Image (tube, rainbow, N blue to C red):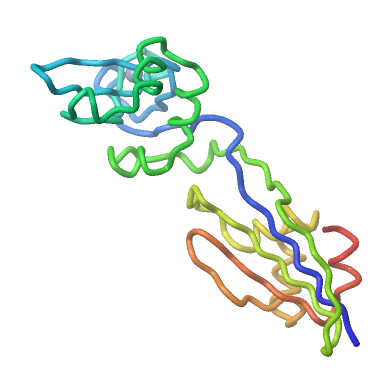
Length: 196
Ligand SMILES: [Zn+2]
């Protein structure tokens, strides 16, 4: 009889994403940051809602479209009033919503990403096989972080040590996509279990 331990993590950004792009004001590539404010434009019965980003050097604005030419009635009433009130929490939510940046073709600077690896599940069960540890890391924002870097974070190990474990077969990659990676370890469960 062995034990199968399964731990799951989720990568959660700590703050709004920074956009990197050419700023017409600075005539250079700069960072644009979340102002925490929305802009609403009415055009007949159609509405546009943007989240306003700003060049951190010259304050040139970059509007990220959340809603484009939609009827007022298609925006949930509660959300609409939060737009009107420049609700900070909602601005933070959209500032970490990867879809918004993809839709607006706004490039996120990976060098400025600050995120937490939050443990969301940890179970152990008896199996007929040998001891095994499964590590799953969910990446709902599809942040571009190399798998060995992600593992290093949850294991509290250096990236080079993790790379060595992978090379030597101590950690085996089962699945890797932009939204989730999964590794198993049979050879050194004690080592892994200690740090998880
Ligand atoms: Zn600028």
